[in-house]
Image 1 (cartoon, helix red, strand yellow):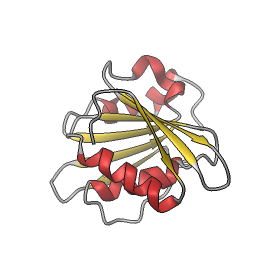
Image 2: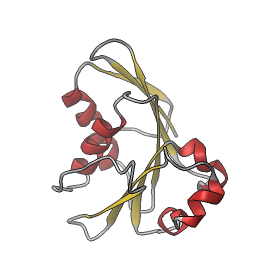
Image 3: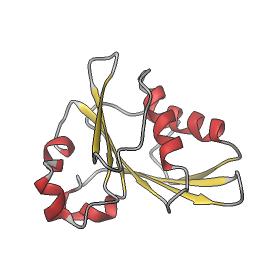
Image 4: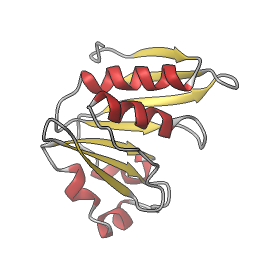
Length: 145
């Protein structure tokens, strides 16, 4: 998937959302950061499962809402850090959890839900995926480099 230009793609099922996420993951490299935006229930965890599978992760991916960060070892030797910052108040709180160490890891893929909580800590170059409900099953995914 070409990730150099802004585009919007549509999904009509969880399986389609996972497939889109898998294609996005396959187009990235270790060190890349994906910001995942969307309301509660938009499909961020579904996207995250597909993203992890696209990197070859066979572990069961769960939302790290209470743990803040889930770490997955990938078959390539790289890591995936899946961060859910919903319960984080701001960048200062995130620093207390050591989020900067995960964000700054050049050998890991970073997938960050609720990135608006830590805007000042984010790398300059990130891929943003904004998921929006369009119906019971349909979602739009706006992808911005």
